[in-house]
Image 1 (cartoon, one colour):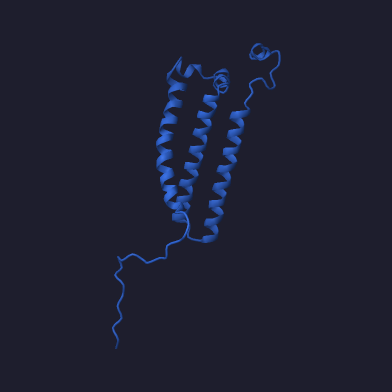
Image 2 (tube, rainbow, N blue to C red; image 1 turned 60 degrees about the horizontal axis):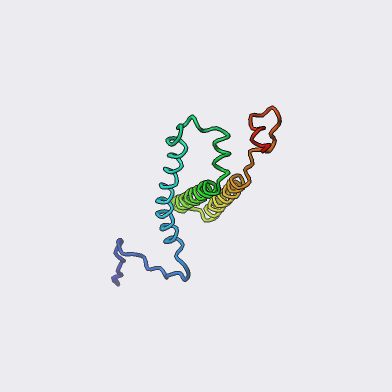
Length: 149
């Protein structure tokens, strides 16, 4: 009888190193960096909208129209939108990769999350940069005077 040795169960599995960029490492770094930036963007957004000025009573259609008239606030909101959606989609991708065992199902779910995030990023960006408070305003609207000037 020959004695065969069994590998220690705690020893790492030797896998060949893939060539190219380590996407998991960059995804991990992105989550940390975007999380820190998102904290700043979100608390700035909440402060301006809920604390500064008249507080929550100031938020109405005219307030949003005034904010979106400024390129600074357009870019602030678009950056917050992009970072949050990519951050969330990357987190969902990680959860799917951890818990879905069937390769085909995993691929479909990851693609679905990616397409949904891309669609929402496109739609949100279009809304922010093409927002026009005067579309559809009639003479009976409270915005009529503002839109005539």
